[in-house]
Length: 347
Ligand SMILES: NC(=O)c1ccc[n+]([C@@H]2O[C@H](COP(=O)([O-])OP(=O)(O)OC[C@H]3O[C@@H](n4cnc5c(N)ncnc54)[C@H](O)[C@@H]3O)[C@@H](O)[C@H]2O)c1
Image (cartoon, rainbow, N blue to C red; front, side):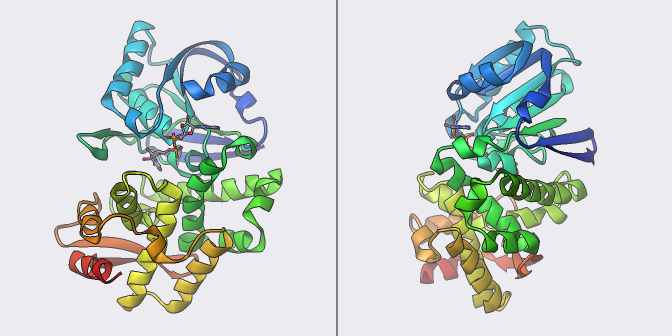
């Protein structure tokens, strides 16, 4: 089992990773465990102690103030104190909502996150961004509140439905292409199936992604225009693809499409080399996905451009796009919306 520790502004975030990580939580006392209905059995058989539990709905629709209120009601009714703790078990939607509730109750109580999807293991549970959707806008309400403990039980990945594995692949490919050439080589030297059937390789893969994200988070915890923007590679176009498809295109596919499109745009604008583009395409092809940009373009182009212009990271006329300068080395390019909409119209 691997233990990682990061010092952040509110204290230390400890990450426990490997087979049996769930058991390492020990006996839970004075805790509220929040989880979706689908994971009741995992909570009942995997967690010990005299804890209270609250089942919630998960999925994008449940990322709402209503769900946060349900958790807060339960914390109030149970007279939980500042020394009590909130534990979330679930994917990114559960950790986003539970993390927000933990940050609000009594101005913040200790919070443990147990991510159960690949996406939440390599991304959503890390880095302290909590959030809910409001008035149709994704993640527009939220706080920065890092879990004090993140427990990643890697053998869970072998039992996950295939779509949950696919949803995490975009993030893994992103780390490899933009900031981690060792991870890139590892992925190219192995098949994804081979990695996921081998616990040692799986732990290596997940721990590399965790270290990559936490390294940037440690340097730019509150996402104030510093290093954290690198994590956005593939996401400006990716989020637009997800939204324009009404979320019928999963996050993993959308990010892969976003990476292909952003690099293609950069090459056409003279901001990236064809060698980088080939490197990104080779990785995505090797992971078993299409490298035809058109296969990811849902909805009409004007709508995609509109989503991109409303991205939280944009200024009035431009947006910053992190692009690999070479595989594993990022650079940040500032691109005008007019260039993006012109590019999309021609696609
Ligand atoms: N806070 C962040 O930094 C951050 C980063 C990336 C994504 N996110 C958010 O994460 C959310 C997506 O999270 P997600 O992809 O984990 O999806 P999710 O939480 O919606 O879970 C997807 C489905 O998988 C089921 N599930 C969970 N664990 C399972 C398991 N082990 N076996 C079988 N089924 C299981 C759930 O019940 C649910 O139906 C989005 O809302 C996104 O905005 C947040």
